[in-house]
Amino acid sequence: MKIKLDIKPLSVNVAWQGRRFSTPAKKQYEEQVLLMLPKQHIPGPYYRIDYKFFLVNFKMTDQQNLLKCLTDCLVKRGIITDDRFIIDERIRKYPSAHDGIELEIEGIGLHEKN
Image: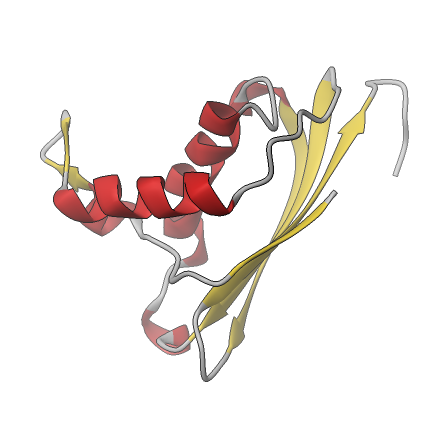
């Protein structure tokens, strides 16, 4: 399944206040992403995800910080069962005039090879 989201990725650095509380920015991001994501479950039991982040602030963004909030939305929306079942992921970032995200998600079995 290919998904394109026209939204600025949210870094975990702005998603949490301390260790327990979500920021208003995280709550707003989650609401927007959940509305944009399709209502379709991808059968597993495991998953391969290709993340592409298109970033206006390319040089200052740590791509690892962009994964958690987005992946949590995939679980919350029911697209994947749980992020602990992601066994293969590729993460790329690109400089862009507009922020955005593209995902390609595939359900896989453990016996499958690259």
